[in-house]
Amino acid sequence: MGSHTLRQSIRYVTSSDGVRLAWASTGSGRPLVKAANWLTHLQYDLESPVWRHWIEFFAEHFHFIRYDERGCGMSQWEVPDVSLARWTDDLATVIDAAHCDEPIALLGISQGASACIGYAVRHPERVSHLILYGGYATGWAKRGDPQGLRRFQAIVELIRFGWGTDTVAFRQVFTSRFAPDATAQQQDWFNELCRRTTTPEIAAHLMLARAEIDVRELLPQLQVPTLVIHPVDDQVTPLSASRELAAEIPNAEFVQLESRNHVLLEHEPAWGQFKEVVLEFTGRGAEKHSDGLDTRFGELSPRERDVLGGLTAGHSNAQIAAHLHISEKTVRNIVSRIFEKLEVESRTQAAVLARDHGFRVQ
Image (cartoon, rainbow, N blue to C red; front, top):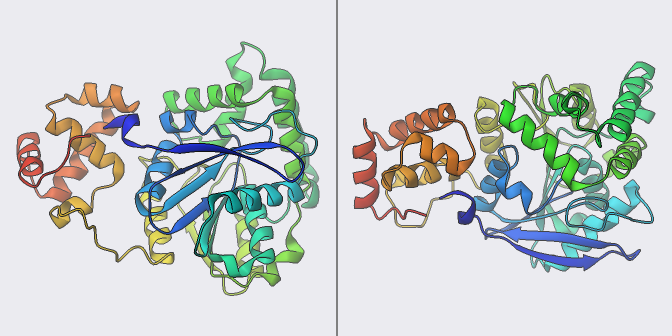
């Protein structure tokens, strides 16, 4: 249960212009590669109440590969160039380093969508599925929206001059846009991650480079199955950006989710819908679990399995919450879902059923 149940291997590879990129792999099965997005740290993300459920979900169903972009995380911070061309080349470098023997699914979140689009146009034979979440074809400097560009530039200045101070309000303005419905703990974690992952100056440089993205001419050239997903009230990237992607990419499927969060949180219904559409799109939804457990256990999410492990070990909700870095309310909600899926009415019944069916306490 908890952070030690998710194991990953971290390696380094050198890009074509000599930048050290850190990449990680976890899980097994068909390969799915996530392009880098704002801002990540391969190790810290495993402890994250904002990103961990994303990693758990993809690791459960795929050989999940991700990396820290140039300029942040465990990758090299001081770099000679930051641009869409470099981001696309870096994605290709990591894919080559992973030695995938079959076509891969690509996941592009936010800015990562443009790198995935560039790669899929360049290597359609190597891509089985393209998933674009909260993505866009054009950055703020290319959208013809002067007011939106001014707001974006104000955020960049806030990063450059406010992040390094002890005034939480500077970072809170930024973080609250990414996950306005996050708990105080989740927002604090996202605040601190950004500050620990790179310098304010590099972060501002990365943001400005995103403003220059323009892949509109590539969209009609895409020849791979594409799923476009977007939260309706996303505070970072407008819904219209994903509608443009879906309209211009041949035969793209479009799904909008009822959420305000640019980064979907584990407790919101939109997260469950996201998982369902991704599994259906990639052909994983109908696959059976082969771990020998009652089929009811196969319906449990990785987080629900973690909580069930705690129940089986006799831990209280407070103990489980502290171990998993989530609130007691979230644990109570998860316990209710476990009861419903396992068709039991008490913690004791859930624990007995788990033990009788060989459920392993992690």
